[in-house]
Length: 452
Image (cartoon, rainbow, N blue to C red; front, side):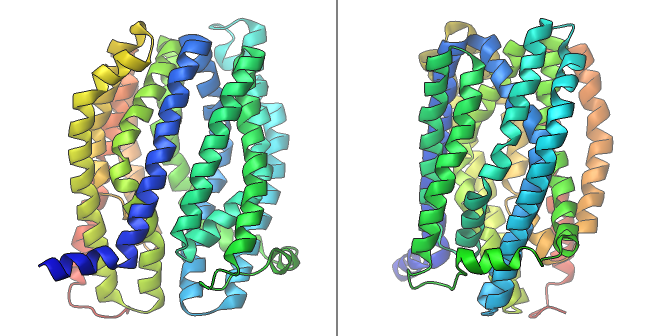
């Protein structure tokens, strides 16, 4: 038993998972500290405006970022496992071209759309100048897509080739840079605009850091990585359509998920309740996010690990790893959420203004209800990508949207302040349906040893 335990601890999967867990803890702790300090400096209304600016920008950014990043990680991981150097360079070039093209497009679209959108949505709830400022701040944030290109390439390269230590270092370093620049911007300007400018500046600093870390990773003796010059040479000739087909299909789904989890509740709260409740909800997400540290290492490590199984045509190993990751993630998140709820209220009372305690804690325990099923879904996206079951993924997600969105809107009309939070908990619980579908599919394939 002792020998098996030591062997397990020495395995690369466990080591990488623990490394990412540590990085996740630092990132979540920094986000929690940042939200607490902004609560005192900006107040609930000002903090809510800043959160909404980031949320509105995410409507554009996440559509490309989430799907393309995951699709590229899976392809680079499979190519690296088989030693296909040209394909590794081509997929990283695809990522660069996608970021530059869509980033420029979103800057232009955001300039015309976001200020006008905010004036129309919030013109009755905010002074006209403040509503337009909110749209301008959201537009400023669209510039970080272009600035973020080097960091995105380095993250994908480290993630796909299972260089988890530099990946964790890059993530943690960017978070600490963001923490200080965001708070520094607020102190200087005494406005949410300072926090927005700090967010943008942090992306520029992280890009410089990523360029240097990537160069060092190329000579660390691990899996091969192309030089920046080799990537740039391929960028002009890389066709976007083929890669975007997978990336945008996944991006459509993941962006819809982001909208339901982050954007829709904030829009409903800002429209039916107040910007203060947007801040309460955002803080509750960050506090409960501390509990999800228990699954972050597993969820980020499982995609390249499963991609390697796919690249080696090892279906039996793929199946075992999927079940192991899902069960470990589900049990860990359930235990962590229970512990988190025990300490959440004293933590809120200690680190936030007194008027935050009750509404934030109420959001916390409602969110926890939906996050338990989500814990068993740490390997959902890698499964759908690598088994070419994206159509099934979209179908299950579409049914979930049809079922949960009307419920969300109805309970928001009944309870404007708490209804959107309950709606999110219901949507998060839909991950259980995905889990049951995959369990049935794997059961049918239980005797397979290689990919058909």
